[in-house]
Every structure is written in C-alpha cells, then in structure tokens.
Image 1 (cartoon, one colour):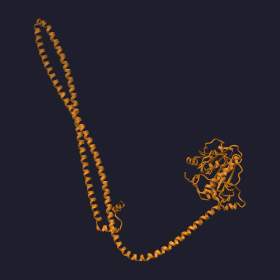
Image 2 (cartoon, rainbow, N blue to C red):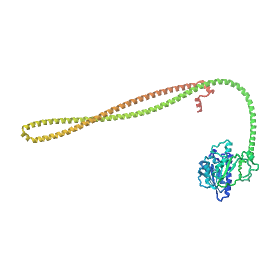
Image 3 (cartoon, rainbow, N blue to C red):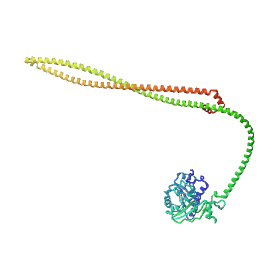
Image 4 (tube, rainbow, N blue to C red):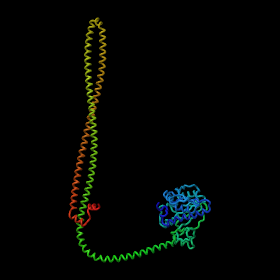
Length: 553
C-alpha cells in the first residue's frame, strides 16, 4: 500500500507528519490508562477509521488490560494492518462508520482521529459513536483547525469534505455528548528529562516563561491552534492534564550536533577537492601552452585543407542529394510495385475464386443438361408408348368397323327374313326359335361393342393427357436450354473481361519491373563512378542509405 495523502503509512511519511499523528494515540493511551485504573475488567476500545492500523496497535500495547478493535471501510488498508500488526488483544474488522457493525453500549472508549473532516454526514457518524459507547464511555476525536490548516496556509486537502474551527467542532459534538472538553494540539520545541532506558513520552508542564508571547514566537498561538482534540461523553469527562509528547526527532541539540558534524565532513571533503582541482589546473595550463604552438602551425594547414574540403563537401552534398532523390524514387517505385503486385496477386486470387465459381456453375449446367436429356428420353418413351396405344386403338376401331359391317349385313338378312316372314308366316313361325337365338347373339355382340367403345373413349382421354404433358415438358426444356445458353454467354463474357484485366495488370507490372531495373542500373552506374568512390573514401558528406544499411549489417 502506498501513501496517497489520505492515510498515514509508517515509513512513508516525514517525521513531522508521523509525530503529529502518533502523538494523538499516545495521548489517548494515557487517558485509557486512567480509565482502566478504576475498572475490574478489560477496557474495550474502538479505533474508528483505523487506516493502516498503527494507532490501534499502540492502543492495544498501552496495557494488557486493554482490548482494541480497529474498523475501516478500506479492504486494502485492513489487509496492510493485519499483515503488520498482531496481538492477542488486537483485532481489525471492516465496517462503515455510518453503520458500525457493533451492538449498543459495547465500548468504553472510541477513538476517531482526523475522521469527521472526511465525512459528508459527520453527525450520522457521531450518532453511531454515541450508540456503541457505554453510558459513561469516552469519545476522543480530533480534527484540523480550519483557520490555521486551510485559511492561514492557503492549503486545500482534496480528501477533506468539510473542515471545522473550534466553535463549529464543539457545536457538532453538542447534540450527542453533554460533557465536552477541547484540547489544542500544536507543534512546539521541547526538552524532556527522563531516566535512561525509559520511554520518552511522559507528563510534563510548560515552564513558567512559556506564555502567549512564547507561543506566538513558536508559531503556535493559542488563538490559532493547529489541531483540535475533543474529549466528549454523556457523563463526566475524566480529568486530563497538559501532555507533552517528545519524539526522538525533536531533540534540537542532537540535531544541531549531527548537522555540525555533517558540515565539517563536507568542508574537509571540499578542501581536498579544491587542492586537487588546483593541481589539475596547473597541469592543464602547462599542457595548453605546449598545444598553442602546435595549434598555430596546424591552423595554416587546416585553412588550406578547409577550403578544399568545403569545395569537395559542396560537390559531395549535391551528389548525395541526387543519390538520395534517386534512392527515394527507387524506394517509392519499389513500394508502388509491391502494392501493385499485391493487388495483382489479390486479383489473381479473386480470378481463381471466380474460376471456381464458374466451374461450379459449369457442373450445375452439365447436371441440368443431363437432367434435360433424361427428360427427353422419358418423353421419347412416352411418345413410343403413345404410338403403341394409337396403333392398338386403330386396330380396335377397325375391328369395331368390321363388326358394324357384319351387323348391317345381319340387319339386311333380318329384313329379308322379315319379308319372307310376312310372306310365309307359317314358315316364319317355324323359324321363330332360330330368330330368338340370332337376337340373343346380336345383343351379346352389341354389349361387347359398347364396352369396347367406352374403352376407346378412355384411351382417347389418356392420349390427350399424355400429349399435354409432352407439350409442357417440351416448353420447359426449351426454357432450360435458353437459360443455360444465356448463363453460358454471361460467364464467357466475365471470363474474357477478367483475362483482359489480368493481362493489362501483368503488362503494367512488367513495365514497373523494367523501370525499377533501369533505376537500379543507373544507381549501379552512379555508385560505380570514380567520383562517388573518391567522395566515399574521403568521407565527404553523408553516406547513402544503401551504404548506411550495409554498414549496420
């Protein structure tokens, strides 16, 4: 976890900021010790907004009879605290300060340092604190004094929602705690006296000379306190004496001695460096005087060489500019050739796909032609069957006509016999039985003729249906042949167009190849000239791009 300005992290802040925060927990630990002296059980303490957990650990370490719980909404801060601090009477728990996850009257002391200024609903937080505190419980809360922290210093903390002065802070606490006492927390120089091998924090009183004028001189005037620390309870607030927290970094005498020692070491080192630099300066002057004569002789030679060099450099620069122009032109042509070649390749791929599609269409056409041929064969078989049926019908009609002729003959015979009957009734009566037999035979022939006539009519209707089907198949075949012919002509035209486009692009690519080869020949001619080799050997002007790339390889 990194320090962002929102939470103090041990080891990542300057000593002043660290002492400013840790002194509050030392102050609260002393008050908790006073409360613990009058109880027969453990003192239950809650550190609301515990952050990185260093303060909760200090509260738990103040006395074995204290049980401290740190609560914060940040999972990252609680993970850091749990990984750095552990004790039997110490615990960290995630929770929202506006809905503390604890029962009523559960704690004897609630600590909320630098908390209320971060909240939009500070009153809601204090209401929750009053709920979880025992009736005689104590709240120890701090907040920066707005008049000093922001207004005098011209500073704006982006993590603060609202800041308070002393009167506003007291009015914020009043609805929830009837008993209140406000302390001032300021930075001030101090000298502490304590036994060897004992802790540096202790109770102290300001000496008699420390009055308002001294406080003003130290930057800690009582009218403008740096921070406000409030003790609040619904019953009596415990008596608390002035408290001075003296960290190791506040020992001014030790700091001055350390600083003086550092300055002396730096001064000794600076003297040694000055002597070494003076000796190097004298040697450099002697060397410079020897070089001055050589420089005079060299200048005359250099002037002559410089004029020749300027002329050759000018010619070489012109030659190099021309070479670079030709190289850029060649590179542009190669890039254009590459682009066109890629386009031709993509066009060839597209032509391949078109050919595949054309082959697919040809296969479909062949299948349709085969289907049409099979349909034509079926039609031919239907025609042969129709011709067969027609021949059979013709034979049956001729048979019926022959039968009709026989019937006419029979009728003529009957008429002759009728006439004979009229003439010879007696003879006719003798022939009555024979005539009855003839009638029966005639009726049988008539019934057979009717059946054959009905079958002939059915055969005519079947022939008409087959002729209609044959006409439809013929029309469908003509339509399919016409569609296939149109599609074949369209594919032929597309193939011819694609082949013409490919031939045109191929010719264009060949022209570009020829132009590029011509440019390469010109480049080889230029690079092979004696003037170019002479300029390159004398290193007059910049190297061509080809030689630079070859040198890198």
